[in-house]
Every structure is written in structure tokens, then in C-alpha cells.
Amino acid sequence: MTTPGDDADMAPDIDTAAERRTEVARVLLTEVREELMRADNKAGLMLASLGAALTALLGAIGSGVVAPRQYAVVPQLLLWVGCAACVPALVLLGLALTPRLGNPRYSRTHYFGDVRLAVSAAHLERTVHRTDLMSRDLSQLATLSRIVWTKYRCIRHALAWGTVFCTLTLLGIVTGASAY
Image 1: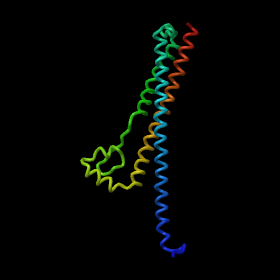
Image 2: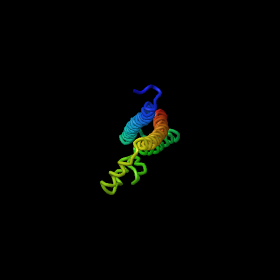
Image 3: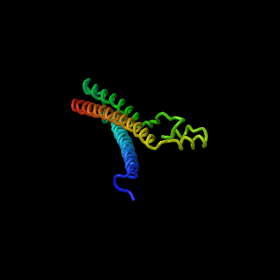
Image 4: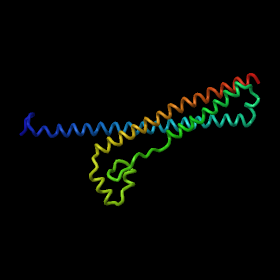
């Protein structure tokens, strides 16, 4: 029979602390994966919206509803500078959606890229056997957090450029059409 102060109770406390750290790492990893999906969805939605706005503008110019060549210099300048601002927005959204694969290594099995590098099933079995789950989770957490941060930075900058595109283009159209 053991009493509350016995050494037999120490092992479960240590295991409980390790399990708690592992659980926290898993929760954080799940959250960062969800945030990664949100970032991709936001970038995709913004890219579709920006593409639709650009398509509508090109359609209006192509059909003659908007005739920038007949505008005065200032409205024409606003329109074309606004259109030029669309380019960095599209590039940044493309960068946000670009897959990032990390740095695969032969000596570990933390990611699918690491598994791809295995030279044989026996090599894969050895690397899987010596993989520490906590190390794997922390490695993925660090890498995915960096990726999400990069995606959101691209999205923020694209949002700014997209705002410049919409504002200046609409301002150029409105001022050009009112003088026309």
C-alpha cells in the first residue's frame, strides 16, 4: 500500500507533466494548421475578388462604357496608377497561396517531405522508430507558424495594394466620367 508521499507517486507526476506538454504542443499544432487553412481561404477569396474586379474593369473598358483615352490627364493618371497597383496585389496573393515545403531531411520523419526522401522502406522504418513525437510536433509547430505568419504578411500587403487599386481606379473613373 502506498501513501501520498511515496516515490511511487513521483513517476505519474512526471509522466503527467510530459503528457501535458505534449498535449499543449498538439493543441497549438492543431490551431496553427487551422490558421493555415484560414490564411489560404482568405488569400483565395481576395484573389477571386480582385480578379473579378479586374475582369469587370477590363470588360467596361473593352465595351466602351469606360473610355480612359477620352479622360483628362489627372483622371487617366488615377485610373492607370490604380491599375498598376493591382499587379503587386496579385503577386502577393499568389505568394500567399504558394505551397511552402520546408527543408526535408533524410534523418527524420517530421513531414511528408522527409518521408519522400527515404531511400528504402527499411530506412523509413528506422527513422520513424527513432522519431520523438514531441520534437516532431515542435518542429512542425515552428515551421507552420512561420509559414502562417508569412502568408498573413503577404495578405496584409496585398490588401493595401488592392485598396489602392480599387480607390484610385474608381476615383479615376468617376472624375473622368463626370468631366466627360
